[in-house]
Image 1 (spheres, rainbow, N blue to C red):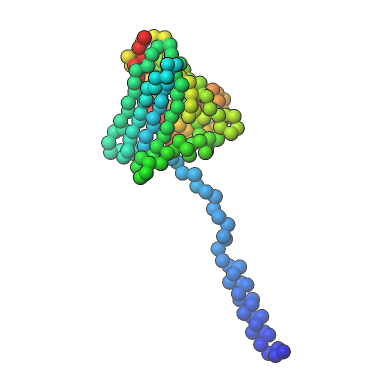
Image 2: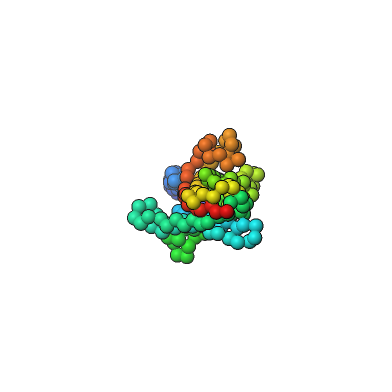
Length: 189
């Protein structure tokens, strides 16, 4: 064996090792969970006879530009409605069903409801037993009101352990609002 090339070989090995050790960190960055783009919110309210009233919010151009289209409906006094919702991003083709994303990330989302003429109860839970609100019950008041309203708020990463949050009180929920819509409705006898 010829040993005169051994120092040269050690130099090459040392340079290769130093070059490879200076490479960038290949550790992947944590995934960024971006806010959902929601252009459409449909609320389906089904009465005890099986009739469904649909409230809808559509804002295809997002903030600014054209005003959203908000459609309410007529509800009966003293009725309990089974509610469900779908959320879409119709700025993409085909439209993205955001409802699926909220179901998959149920621990990171919660809907909050308020109304001057109705009360609400959650009928679904996340994997930890906390409310989500994709399904709910809505009990209307007993007095006719031609100018009732229902507000729906979706919070991203709320503090579900906050005081009253599991009962639907948004006061201590924190988090970011993904969408907030007030639907007008008429309450008839």
